[in-house]
Image (cartoon, rainbow, N blue to C red; front, side, top):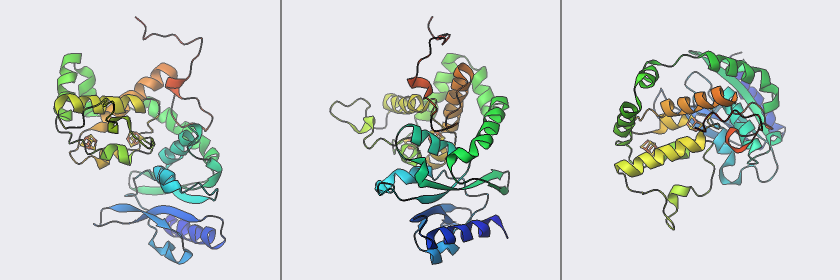
Length: 276
Ligand code: SF4
Ligand code: SF4
């Protein structure tokens, strides 16, 4: 039995037994290469569930929508390691209870999809630790290496050029499972902190504010970059911030649901190398 079939039948059983009220998974998209989120509530609908190497979207953020978990019942959700880490962070930030999240875990290795054994986020700690060790050794891609070799003025010019294309659609924010505020600070107009129109200064402010807000929280799932209609290389910012936090604090977000946030915790033995 393929993994797709295996998870379809698990989803069917969970719904039929009333163990979960919904399965959040992937279905065929509008074009053959696309997959889209699907919200299944009836066992007979489970044949719509798809699982292949195109299932890249981190679905964890959908659990926070529309008060889905407010009745205390469980929901099953297809999640890769990044998704499981997201559940840990959202639990640590008191946005959900991990006991309500039944995980159908998988990993994509190049074009192959593999099962990850476990039901609750806590069952995946070994896989997450292995990810952390791999992440520490990961070399930067070509563009990231080029950016690292630039001086500060050159990097600023690069990012100003990239951000000049931003149309302030906020698709990156909407797609990000970590952007869970009901009202984003950039939508406030009394006072208005970030200009809403799409111009150089406001675009820079928006993208930098978002990057800092995600430092030590981003799981590098890539949802934001895939959602960006003008292909701004947001992954470079996310990777940079994640790498810095990993190096400075040995902090890899989403290790477990009790992990303290890197930028909201204090240790007396912090070397404080950022203080000049
Ligand atoms: S910032 Fe982007 S890569 Fe990071 S968690 Fe949000 S959507 Fe995923
Ligand atoms: S998705 Fe892209 S264009 Fe839209 S606000 Fe984010 S960075 Fe700007």
